[in-house]
Image (spheres, rainbow, N blue to C red):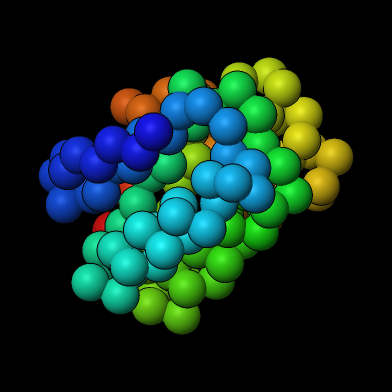
Length: 113
């Protein structure tokens, strides 16, 4: 499931379920489409994500690269421990901005603007 909200000029995308090869194609299409539509300040709320595969990690990496090209910002938040472990094993915790909550992620983007 993908839900989008706006908070102070920031697009907050809430994900739930599995971010695997089945879900990643649609997710990438939607997220990259938002960047193309000039939504360049994003928070990805991962509180409801129970599993992420390498295909899901690739989507996040592509999104980050597209946002960097557009001089945008991305903050991930509310990772379950199992998802955080996948990010750590992949070496992605040093690549992505990660906060413990949506409020902290929004504050981080506000401070960056």
